[in-house]
Structure formats: C-alpha cells, structure tokens
Length: 385
Ligand code: SF4
Image (cartoon, rainbow, N blue to C red):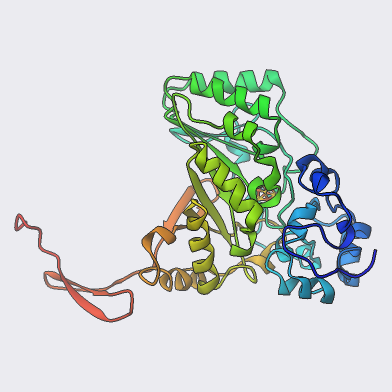
C-alpha cells in the first residue's frame, strides 16, 4: 500500500481507503482488521529499526490498533514515522524504550493479584469489588496497568466462573459497588453483558454497578442501540467510566457513541492517565476535560501512570503532575478538574492536591489563591472553639 492519503479523521484512509462504509462502521470488521503485526504497521507508517527489532523480539505487550483509531492519528507524524509527534499513536505503538525496566517498576504495580478471591474477583477495598470478565480489549495501550494479564489468552470468565463470582458478591453484604472491567467488558456479547447486569441488579445490597471501558474511543461503532439498552438503569444504575486521554480521541463517532449512552440514561465518567508526551500539559488537559464535558462525560480521575514494567518513558513525576493540576485549579471550571490520584501497591488510590496553605499565622491561615496571591483566611470556628 502507498503513502497515507489526506483524509478526514474517523473516515477510511490509507490501507483502508476503499473500504465500504458498511464495513468501516461494523465493529466486528474493525476488530478483524486491527493492526497487530510489524508488516501491518509498516503499511501505515515507516517503522524505525529499533521498533522493528523490539517487535521481532516479542515486545512487551500485545499490539492491536483498530483502523478507526488509526484514522485519528496525526498525518504528519505518520508520514515522518514519528510517534512522538502524535499523542494518540504514542499510546498504542510499541517503542523499544519499553525494554528498559526501571528498578521500581513491577508487573502487578497495584498488588491486585494478592487480592484475588475467586476467579475474576479482586477484593481490595471493603465495600466494593473489581470483576474482571475478559482479558481482551479493542486496542492495547502500552502503559496498561494489567499488561501482565490483559491479552494473555485467558479469554473470558465462563458461566461457572461468573456464577461463582456472583455467589461471592451475594455472600458479602458489605459490597455495595461492583466495577466490571478487564480487558474491556464492552467486548462481551450484548446479551451476555445484559444478563450479567440483570443478575447484579438482583443483589439487594448493591447500590450501583460501574463499567470501565475504552471502547467508545477505540471502537465507537460498538455502542449500538442494543448495547445501550443492555446498560440501561434497572433497580440500580450502571455508571460507565470511559478512559479518555486526549481531546483528539473525541472525534465525531466517539461523541455520538457517548451521546447514545447518555441519552439511554447511562451516567458517564471520565478516567484519564497522565502520560508524558501525550497529555502532560495543562493546555492539553484543559481542552481534554472541557471536550469530555461537552460530550457529557464528567472528568472523574486523573491517574498517575502506574509503574508498570517498561513504561518509564511515558511517566511524569508527581511534582510535575501537581504543578499541572495547580495550573488547572481555578483556571478552569471545577467541573473540569478531576481528582488526581496515585495508586499505592496494596494501599489503594490516594488523591494528591497542590498545597495552597502557606503558613498558619495565629488564628488565620495564609493561603495562596489560584492566581498565586496570598490571602489571610480566618480559622476560628463560629462557635469560638
Ligand atoms: S483499554 Fe484499558 S485494559 Fe485495555 S489495554 Fe488499554 S488500559 Fe489496558
């Protein structure tokens, strides 16, 4: 195939320029035509020798890029073979830098495996569990926290394992919230996912169910009317948290998919991973969070990139992250500023926030406003205590 042609983001281009729109808009066609090999990637952009050698060695993690997501890549970066110039390509293209393992990086950086109780269940916090139903994703992110397990060929939980997982949840009345994740649960068949949500809604001590997904970004055509119906509110709502890292991921097809979910009564939250060279810039994050809100997705978490093996080139420092958050707080709507969290191995998520209190002066706090100027804030309670 020839060089990448000028095209509209989200439309067939380059290797797929002659694909019928009925195929392009079919999520199964998109999955069948994912880029997974060096040869397929080389038809999209000139790969460097180091990348080819890294892929030939087996790389660190599964490669898989939907044609739709590839259509959003920056064309100049594709022509130059420079993933560093495209924040979307950088997230999914293998990089020989993945061969460098920093001493603090781990295969299971959150310590989840030690909290696995029955197959599929991770029970780390007292009142909620993670239910990992599949190891398959629409496309694969190079920084995936569950890279040790995702795309490992363990496929989906079978019906016996689902029965056991539901029995476990039923048997612990402390549990109020189940987060269905993976892999990507929206790659399950619609009927199977709907049945799972039905059964969870029948467990009387659950208050809500969450689903973590990146399908609206990688494969928005999967979000059809039947899927939206399967995720409708029952006795309890199903919150869908969409992993979105950059405003350029929010093309028209993704916006429409999110709109279908919101119109179907599905509350939407956003989860963003802070990644060097992708979104570690206050202006990029500001535009991303505003674009999410326009698409009816409330920014919920900004996660520090977990210390997964081979991801140091994608990680920023916590200091840098806090400096970025400081440039968001007050400078844009509070709706557009998610909680910034680090995740401690075995210790759970911890929100971090810039420190605005400069000092205590008698009964007053000296506090910096969002623009940096100091203010005195009276710290006496109204009761005088
Ligand atoms: S979509 Fe989520 S689970 Fe899948 S590879 Fe990306 S980060 Fe990992």
